[in-house]
Image (cartoon, rainbow, N blue to C red; front, side, top):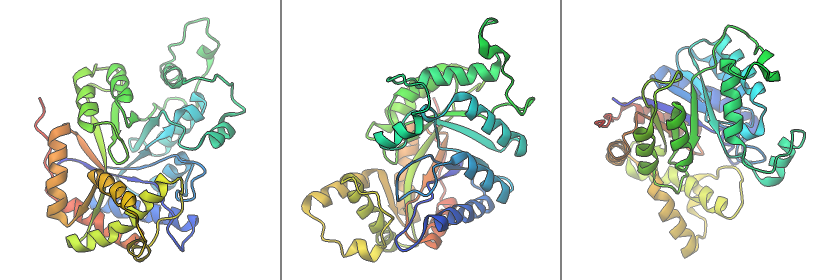
Amino acid sequence: MIPLSVLDLSFVTSGSTPAQALRNTLDLARHTDELGYTRFWVAEHHNLPSVASGAPDIMIGQIAAVTERIRVGSGGVMLPNHAPLMVAERFKLLEALYPGRIDLGLGRAPGTDPVTSYALRRMQEERGRDDFLERLQELLLLETRSFPPDHPFRKIEIMPSGVPLPPIWLLGSSDYSAHLSAQVGLGFGFAHHFATHDATDAMLAYRRGFQPSQWLAQPHAILTVAVICAETDEEAERLAASADLGFVRRMRGEFGPIPTPEEALAYPYTPADREMIRRNRERLFVGAPETVRKRLQSLIDETKADELMVTSAMYDHEARKRSYDLIRAIDLRPAVQG
Protein backbone atom coordinates (compact mmCIF):
# COMPACT_ATOMS: atom_id res chain seq x y z
CA MET A 1 0.00 0.00 0.00
CA ILE A 2 1.26 3.48 -0.81
CA PRO A 3 2.16 5.59 2.27
CA LEU A 4 -0.64 7.98 3.23
CA SER A 5 -0.19 11.32 4.97
CA VAL A 6 -2.23 14.36 6.03
CA LEU A 7 -2.10 18.08 5.25
CA ASP A 8 -4.33 20.09 7.57
CA LEU A 9 -4.83 23.85 7.32
CA SER A 10 -6.82 24.39 10.54
CA PHE A 11 -9.82 25.56 8.54
CA VAL A 12 -12.30 27.77 10.38
CA THR A 13 -15.91 26.71 9.88
CA SER A 14 -19.12 28.72 9.85
CA GLY A 15 -20.45 29.34 13.36
CA SER A 16 -17.22 28.23 15.04
CA THR A 17 -13.99 29.97 16.09
CA PRO A 18 -10.33 29.90 15.01
CA ALA A 19 -9.45 28.55 18.46
CA GLN A 20 -11.74 25.57 17.88
CA ALA A 21 -10.16 25.04 14.46
CA LEU A 22 -6.76 24.69 16.15
CA ARG A 23 -8.16 22.20 18.66
CA ASN A 24 -9.69 20.25 15.77
CA THR A 25 -6.25 20.03 14.16
CA LEU A 26 -4.82 18.49 17.33
CA ASP A 27 -7.73 16.05 17.51
CA LEU A 28 -7.29 15.06 13.85
CA ALA A 29 -3.57 14.55 14.40
CA ARG A 30 -4.22 12.16 17.29
CA HIS A 31 -6.82 10.33 15.19
CA THR A 32 -4.63 9.87 12.12
CA ASP A 33 -1.66 8.89 14.27
CA GLU A 34 -3.75 6.02 15.64
CA LEU A 35 -4.83 5.08 12.09
CA GLY A 36 -1.22 4.71 10.96
CA TYR A 37 -0.80 7.69 8.65
CA THR A 38 2.84 8.49 7.86
CA ARG A 39 2.98 12.29 8.25
CA PHE A 40 0.88 15.17 9.50
CA TRP A 41 1.82 18.53 7.98
CA VAL A 42 0.49 22.02 8.69
CA ALA A 43 0.80 25.11 6.50
CA GLU A 44 1.68 28.79 6.80
CA HIS A 45 -0.97 31.28 5.70
CA HIS A 46 -1.57 34.84 6.88
CA ASN A 47 -4.54 37.23 6.92
CA LEU A 48 -7.01 34.54 5.83
CA PRO A 49 -10.18 34.36 7.98
CA SER A 50 -10.62 30.77 6.77
CA VAL A 51 -7.25 29.53 8.13
CA ALA A 52 -6.53 29.70 11.86
CA SER A 53 -2.77 29.16 12.01
CA GLY A 54 0.04 31.24 10.58
CA ALA A 55 2.73 29.64 12.74
CA PRO A 56 3.48 26.07 11.61
CA ASP A 57 6.52 25.69 13.86
CA ILE A 58 4.41 26.30 16.97
CA MET A 59 1.68 23.96 15.74
CA ILE A 60 4.24 21.25 14.96
CA GLY A 61 5.44 21.26 18.56
CA GLN A 62 1.89 21.06 19.87
CA ILE A 63 0.98 18.22 17.49
CA ALA A 64 4.14 16.22 18.21
CA ALA A 65 3.41 16.53 21.93
CA VAL A 66 -0.03 14.90 21.64
CA THR A 67 0.93 12.15 19.17
CA GLU A 68 3.26 9.18 19.48
CA ARG A 69 4.46 7.91 16.10
CA ILE A 70 3.40 10.07 13.17
CA ARG A 71 5.96 12.41 11.59
CA VAL A 72 4.99 16.08 11.96
CA GLY A 73 6.08 18.85 9.65
CA SER A 74 5.47 22.01 7.69
CA GLY A 75 3.66 22.05 4.41
CA GLY A 76 5.26 24.46 4.44
CA VAL A 77 7.28 27.22 5.99
CA MET A 78 7.24 30.10 3.50
CA LEU A 79 10.98 30.73 3.43
CA PRO A 80 10.82 34.25 1.92
CA ASN A 81 9.04 35.38 5.10
CA HIS A 82 11.83 34.26 7.45
CA ALA A 83 15.53 34.56 8.07
CA PRO A 84 17.11 31.16 7.26
CA LEU A 85 18.91 31.17 10.62
CA MET A 86 15.60 31.51 12.47
CA VAL A 87 14.12 28.60 10.51
CA ALA A 88 17.19 26.47 11.28
CA GLU A 89 17.06 27.28 15.01
CA ARG A 90 13.36 26.51 15.38
CA PHE A 91 13.42 23.26 13.44
CA LYS A 92 16.58 22.02 15.15
CA LEU A 93 14.83 22.70 18.44
CA LEU A 94 11.83 20.66 17.30
CA GLU A 95 14.14 17.87 16.10
CA ALA A 96 15.91 17.86 19.47
CA LEU A 97 12.61 17.50 21.32
CA TYR A 98 11.07 14.95 18.93
CA PRO A 99 14.02 13.21 17.24
CA GLY A 100 13.24 11.44 13.99
CA ARG A 101 9.67 12.76 13.81
CA ILE A 102 10.01 16.24 12.27
CA ASP A 103 9.90 17.35 8.61
CA LEU A 104 10.87 20.75 7.22
CA GLY A 105 8.83 21.56 4.14
CA LEU A 106 9.75 24.85 2.45
CA GLY A 107 7.59 26.96 0.16
CA ARG A 108 8.50 29.79 -2.18
CA ALA A 109 5.24 31.78 -2.08
CA PRO A 110 4.42 34.32 0.66
CA GLY A 111 1.24 32.53 1.73
CA THR A 112 -0.72 35.78 1.80
CA ASP A 113 -1.62 39.02 0.02
CA PRO A 114 0.98 41.66 -0.96
CA VAL A 115 0.22 44.06 1.93
CA THR A 116 0.47 41.34 4.58
CA SER A 117 3.59 40.02 2.89
CA TYR A 118 5.14 43.47 3.20
CA ALA A 119 4.17 43.65 6.88
CA LEU A 120 5.83 40.27 7.49
CA ARG A 121 9.08 41.29 5.82
CA ARG A 122 9.35 45.07 6.27
CA MET A 123 11.96 44.87 9.02
CA GLN A 124 14.09 42.60 6.88
CA GLU A 125 16.42 43.88 4.17
CA GLU A 126 14.32 44.91 1.16
CA ARG A 127 15.59 43.22 -2.00
CA GLY A 128 12.67 43.65 -4.35
CA ARG A 129 13.17 40.30 -6.09
CA ASP A 130 12.64 36.57 -5.70
CA ASP A 131 15.41 35.47 -3.33
CA PHE A 132 14.09 32.00 -2.46
CA LEU A 133 17.11 30.20 -3.95
CA GLU A 134 19.53 32.47 -2.09
CA ARG A 135 17.71 31.82 1.20
CA LEU A 136 17.68 28.07 0.57
CA GLN A 137 21.43 28.10 -0.11
CA GLU A 138 22.03 30.07 3.08
CA LEU A 139 19.96 27.59 5.10
CA LEU A 140 21.93 24.63 3.72
CA LEU A 141 25.28 26.36 4.22
CA LEU A 142 24.37 27.15 7.83
CA GLU A 143 23.54 23.49 8.41
CA THR A 144 26.75 22.17 6.81
CA ARG A 145 28.92 25.05 8.05
CA SER A 146 30.25 25.34 4.52
CA PHE A 147 30.58 29.11 4.23
CA PRO A 148 34.04 30.24 3.03
CA PRO A 149 36.59 30.70 5.85
CA ASP A 150 36.37 34.51 5.65
CA HIS A 151 32.55 34.66 5.64
CA PRO A 152 31.09 36.16 8.86
CA PHE A 153 28.38 33.45 9.02
CA ARG A 154 31.10 30.79 9.24
CA LYS A 155 31.29 31.37 13.00
CA ILE A 156 27.58 30.90 13.65
CA GLU A 157 26.73 27.76 15.60
CA ILE A 158 23.05 26.96 15.44
CA MET A 159 21.60 25.92 18.76
CA PRO A 160 20.78 23.35 19.90
CA SER A 161 24.10 22.07 18.63
CA GLY A 162 24.68 18.44 17.73
CA VAL A 163 21.17 18.15 16.27
CA PRO A 164 20.66 17.86 12.49
CA LEU A 165 18.05 19.73 10.55
CA PRO A 166 15.00 17.54 9.89
CA PRO A 167 14.58 16.19 6.35
CA ILE A 168 13.99 19.07 3.93
CA TRP A 169 11.23 19.05 1.32
CA LEU A 170 10.68 21.65 -1.38
CA LEU A 171 7.01 22.28 -2.07
CA GLY A 172 5.46 23.64 -5.22
CA SER A 173 2.53 23.94 -7.60
CA SER A 174 4.62 24.29 -10.78
CA ASP A 175 7.77 22.69 -12.16
CA TYR A 176 10.14 25.22 -10.51
CA SER A 177 10.49 23.36 -7.20
CA ALA A 178 10.44 20.05 -9.06
CA HIS A 179 13.60 20.95 -10.96
CA LEU A 180 15.27 22.67 -8.00
CA SER A 181 14.64 19.86 -5.52
CA ALA A 182 15.90 17.34 -8.08
CA GLN A 183 19.05 19.37 -8.69
CA VAL A 184 19.82 19.85 -4.98
CA GLY A 185 18.80 16.31 -4.05
CA LEU A 186 15.87 17.03 -1.72
CA GLY A 187 12.39 15.60 -1.31
CA PHE A 188 9.60 17.16 -3.37
CA GLY A 189 5.94 17.79 -2.63
CA PHE A 190 3.47 18.81 -5.33
CA ALA A 191 0.24 20.66 -4.47
CA HIS A 192 -2.20 18.98 -6.83
CA HIS A 193 -5.08 20.25 -4.68
CA PHE A 194 -4.72 23.81 -6.00
CA ALA A 195 -2.16 23.67 -8.82
CA THR A 196 -2.98 24.57 -12.40
CA HIS A 197 0.29 23.03 -13.62
CA ASP A 198 0.09 19.39 -14.70
CA ALA A 199 1.01 17.17 -11.77
CA THR A 200 2.40 14.39 -13.94
CA ASP A 201 4.78 16.77 -15.70
CA ALA A 202 6.18 18.13 -12.42
CA MET A 203 6.43 14.78 -10.65
CA LEU A 204 8.15 13.01 -13.54
CA ALA A 205 10.50 15.95 -14.13
CA TYR A 206 11.62 15.67 -10.51
CA ARG A 207 12.23 11.95 -10.81
CA ARG A 208 14.12 12.24 -14.12
CA GLY A 209 16.38 15.02 -12.90
CA PHE A 210 17.07 13.83 -9.35
CA GLN A 211 20.70 13.97 -8.23
CA PRO A 212 21.60 11.96 -5.09
CA SER A 213 22.95 14.16 -2.31
CA GLN A 214 23.96 14.18 1.33
CA TRP A 215 20.31 14.99 2.04
CA LEU A 216 18.62 12.19 0.10
CA ALA A 217 19.94 9.15 -1.77
CA GLN A 218 16.80 8.36 -3.80
CA PRO A 219 13.98 10.61 -5.10
CA HIS A 220 10.88 10.83 -2.96
CA ALA A 221 7.87 12.68 -4.36
CA ILE A 222 4.76 13.41 -2.31
CA LEU A 223 1.53 14.21 -4.14
CA THR A 224 -0.98 16.25 -2.13
CA VAL A 225 -4.61 15.74 -3.15
CA ALA A 226 -7.96 17.02 -1.92
CA VAL A 227 -10.32 14.20 -0.98
CA ILE A 228 -13.82 14.07 0.52
CA CYS A 229 -14.83 10.48 1.20
CA ALA A 230 -18.01 9.14 2.83
CA GLU A 231 -19.94 5.88 3.06
CA THR A 232 -21.86 6.63 -0.14
CA ASP A 233 -21.36 8.82 -3.19
CA GLU A 234 -24.49 10.76 -2.24
CA GLU A 235 -23.25 11.62 1.25
CA ALA A 236 -19.82 12.58 -0.08
CA GLU A 237 -21.48 14.91 -2.59
CA ARG A 238 -23.48 16.54 0.19
CA LEU A 239 -20.33 17.13 2.24
CA ALA A 240 -18.45 18.42 -0.81
CA ALA A 241 -21.04 21.14 -1.38
CA SER A 242 -19.22 23.18 1.29
CA ALA A 243 -15.97 22.91 -0.65
CA ASP A 244 -17.74 23.93 -3.87
CA LEU A 245 -19.14 27.13 -2.38
CA GLY A 246 -15.85 27.86 -0.62
CA PHE A 247 -14.03 27.61 -3.94
CA VAL A 248 -16.46 29.95 -5.71
CA ARG A 249 -16.04 32.51 -2.95
CA ARG A 250 -12.23 32.26 -3.03
CA MET A 251 -12.28 32.93 -6.76
CA ARG A 252 -14.11 36.16 -5.91
CA GLY A 253 -11.52 37.10 -3.29
CA GLU A 254 -13.74 36.09 -0.35
CA PHE A 255 -11.89 33.98 2.23
CA GLY A 256 -14.48 33.36 4.91
CA PRO A 257 -15.07 30.26 7.05
CA ILE A 258 -16.15 26.99 5.43
CA PRO A 259 -19.95 27.14 4.99
CA THR A 260 -22.36 24.42 6.04
CA PRO A 261 -23.51 21.92 3.39
CA GLU A 262 -27.06 23.25 3.81
CA GLU A 263 -25.93 26.81 3.05
CA ALA A 264 -23.97 25.61 0.05
CA LEU A 265 -26.80 23.49 -1.36
CA ALA A 266 -29.22 26.43 -1.11
CA TYR A 267 -26.83 28.92 -2.72
CA PRO A 268 -28.05 30.54 -6.00
CA TYR A 269 -25.12 29.60 -8.25
CA THR A 270 -24.81 31.27 -11.65
CA PRO A 271 -23.89 29.25 -14.75
CA ALA A 272 -20.38 30.72 -14.47
CA ASP A 273 -20.17 29.54 -10.85
CA ARG A 274 -21.17 26.03 -11.83
CA GLU A 275 -18.55 25.96 -14.57
CA MET A 276 -15.89 27.00 -12.03
CA ILE A 277 -17.04 24.19 -9.74
CA ARG A 278 -16.95 21.69 -12.60
CA ARG A 279 -13.35 22.60 -13.45
CA ASN A 280 -12.28 22.49 -9.80
CA ARG A 281 -13.83 19.03 -9.40
CA GLU A 282 -11.13 17.74 -11.75
CA ARG A 283 -8.70 18.11 -8.82
CA LEU A 284 -11.13 17.30 -6.00
CA PHE A 285 -11.78 13.60 -5.34
CA VAL A 286 -15.30 13.06 -4.01
CA GLY A 287 -17.20 9.85 -3.38
CA ALA A 288 -17.51 6.53 -1.61
CA PRO A 289 -14.27 4.55 -1.14
CA GLU A 290 -14.42 2.67 -4.45
CA THR A 291 -15.24 5.82 -6.40
CA VAL A 292 -12.31 7.63 -4.81
CA ARG A 293 -9.99 4.64 -5.22
CA LYS A 294 -10.38 4.48 -8.98
CA ARG A 295 -9.49 8.14 -9.50
CA LEU A 296 -6.65 8.18 -6.99
CA GLN A 297 -5.06 4.99 -8.30
CA SER A 298 -5.07 6.37 -11.83
CA LEU A 299 -3.32 9.54 -10.65
CA ILE A 300 -0.75 7.59 -8.62
CA ASP A 301 0.06 5.46 -11.65
CA GLU A 302 0.45 8.52 -13.90
CA THR A 303 2.56 10.63 -11.54
CA LYS A 304 4.66 7.80 -10.03
CA ALA A 305 4.02 9.32 -6.60
CA ASP A 306 5.96 7.74 -3.75
CA GLU A 307 3.46 8.98 -1.18
CA LEU A 308 -0.04 10.43 -1.13
CA MET A 309 -0.86 13.34 1.19
CA VAL A 310 -4.55 14.05 1.72
CA THR A 311 -6.17 17.35 2.62
CA SER A 312 -9.90 17.68 3.35
CA ALA A 313 -11.70 21.02 3.61
CA MET A 314 -14.93 19.92 5.26
CA TYR A 315 -17.42 21.67 7.52
CA ASP A 316 -18.09 18.77 9.89
CA HIS A 317 -15.08 17.71 11.95
CA GLU A 318 -16.39 14.22 12.70
CA ALA A 319 -17.17 13.68 9.01
CA ARG A 320 -13.60 14.74 8.19
CA LYS A 321 -12.24 12.18 10.66
CA ARG A 322 -14.50 9.53 9.13
CA SER A 323 -13.21 10.47 5.67
CA TYR A 324 -9.66 9.73 6.82
CA ASP A 325 -10.88 6.40 8.27
CA LEU A 326 -12.28 5.38 4.90
CA ILE A 327 -9.29 6.60 2.90
CA ARG A 328 -6.91 4.65 5.15
CA ALA A 329 -8.83 1.45 4.35
CA ILE A 330 -8.67 1.91 0.56
CA ASP A 331 -6.28 -0.43 -1.23
CA LEU A 332 -4.08 2.11 -3.05
CA ARG A 333 -1.04 0.55 -4.68
CA PRO A 334 2.32 2.25 -5.32
CA ALA A 335 3.04 2.96 -8.97
CA VAL A 336 5.51 0.78 -10.82
CA GLN A 337 8.65 2.94 -11.02
CA GLY A 338 10.85 3.10 -14.04
